[in-house]
Length: 392
Image 1 (cartoon, helix red, strand yellow):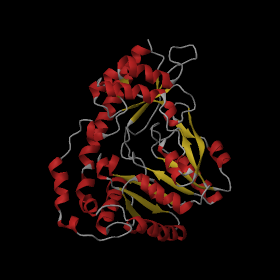
Image 2: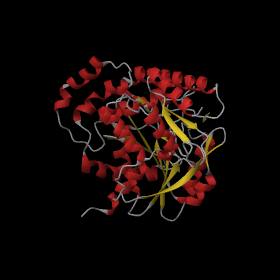
Image 3: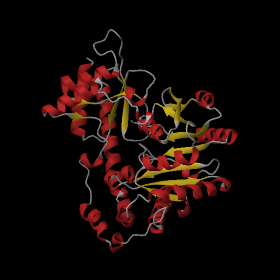
Image 4: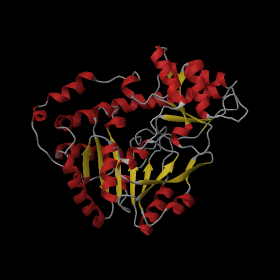
């Protein structure tokens, strides 16, 4: 009765079983996986945000495939003010989420069974998005040597006649690594050689640990490039469901891409009018929220580094940006916790600490733990101390 594209494993794994048992028991958890900023104690200008939805424009219905010109101009102004990049508002499409933007681009570029190249480790959502669009994901490697870099040999080996695009997360989730200028040049050269596009997720672009700001791929014109972002991270407003897609690159490719995307977007007309009318105010929240989040991220990362100095076995991997930290934990078949999942379950059951095992993100070995740096600092410290205790 059901399509094969939805034949995902639906049974609960041991980690999920342990988590569900603890939650149903009512035991308080120290959640070191927090990704929802609205639950992390940041200060929001509630009155200003709510007042944004009082505009009379919210009551008018004006169905435009790309989104309202005024809202798209605000997004273009964000790129100019924050990233010194001039974008034509006509190259922007407003969507309800980056997931929807991915859907648009996958449908634009791929026939059933075509391939997209995706980095590993990276965010696991792509597998579901690709399945739903009948697209095949082919991995290439991010390698680590005191910092992350693209393994271009594995990337070139992955290219076939069915490859349509290279998918990047810049900076990557969860590794916190960004695409360096030399890597960007190599990627553009590969795209030109093999007639490929770039799909670049930049939701964490505004959160570098140290200056200068990271360069957006929307500034590039070498390859046909689809740059995705939105309010979920930029303004820490995931509930507002406003994202966008920027199309840049050679004019002879950009125009037909925009023309086709406009028909795709017109088919759905998904982003609500009130959200578009409120975009000016909602996007402006980034100034306050970004500062708060960067302070939190830097505080927790410094706290983590301090706690780890007292021991020598758990390693904090290098990162440049984002909301997460990756820990490499020494595990062996003879240890009480022979895998990252076993360690995560032990932390849940014995210490009531929630972390993500690295295999969720397809790390090449099963000895990585991922923790969120936007967790409230007191919870973060207690959780890390429990992790260290479990390894002592």
